[in-house]
Length: 344
Picture (cartoon, rainbow, N blue to C red):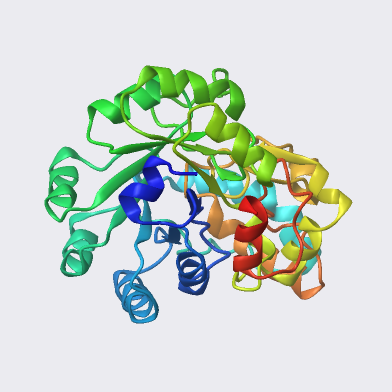
């Protein structure tokens, strides 16, 4: 079990707890770190002040290394016409719940910026990971000047080689099985996306930096298979969604532990960008990909009132029930128990 990830970060296990925006806070990060893995904190939906407070909470609880995760998307220009089409598409649901179809405000995701870098630089975070590519080269150089390790997700060999050439220290090979948002960034096509165990060895052969395997790994067998194929470690998310330390809603937890979790699909409905979640009513009725969904992350705010109204009725019909394709091992247990089951 002596892998590069363990050696570089002084971990007990070659595992990264996947950053999962909206279903965790720093308590899961801390628990994962204390259990001997690299705990991650999703920061794209947090304010600068919230990120700083979370870092201070992490550092007060553990001296182990941790990972801050950010998005690198380019926010779209305001498009009132696109929003109007999206609201018109959702209007029947608003009427069903007796909601006003006023354009909702906020609820988006923020890309990494100089402002965020200014705030976190004093803490010299050990690891920063990125989704949707990398920040601009000036920010990459700045992060490296702190001594921080940079990770980023690749969904194709071409993305992996681009990341290796543009400053990434480690590649996260994200297989098509993975839950949540796809990390693709060189183009928007899903045609060249592939499963993890086809993608992983190709990326390992294509780059000279360490590769972490992500997507559909949920038990010891998956970990061993990924390491055998050349991975320097694994990143796992779905198994942690039902851990005690996650903030996953009761509806989402219940669904993950039901037969419904056997049917996941990529969809653009919840954010405007492909992401894998458990199929529910809105995916069935509007189709997993709907041309009226505005560009990422602009689709999110209009769905928020529907999600709130349905969840008040104990329904996940309008909730983003993120999950990878392998949720069969999800159960209520501690983060430490999840981790130990993967390696013992």
